[in-house]
Amino acid sequence: MYAINWSNRAKNQFRKIDRKEQGTIIDAVDELENFPNTKNVIALTKHEYGYRMRVGNYRVMFDADTTVRIIEIQRVRKRDEQTY
Image (cartoon, rainbow, N blue to C red; front, side, top):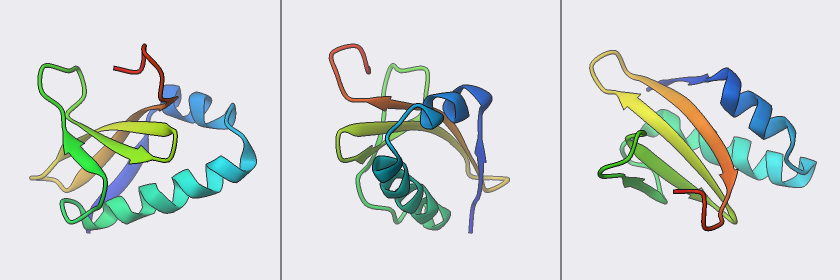
């Protein structure tokens, strides 16, 4: 199992999201404890973050340290042309 940490930036972005969507995102992020066997996760190449998870119209960008088994949530953004 992986421990999940949220960066301050991700927490602030998360607070601005609609409550209904927040619940969906929390459920999806909780599934990251079983990383790498998680749905809708793609490794990013040539990007500042290592992975992204698709949750409806939102994208959760995160880094995973597989040796220590920690996932650091870096950003939570609504998908648009500036997300990536």
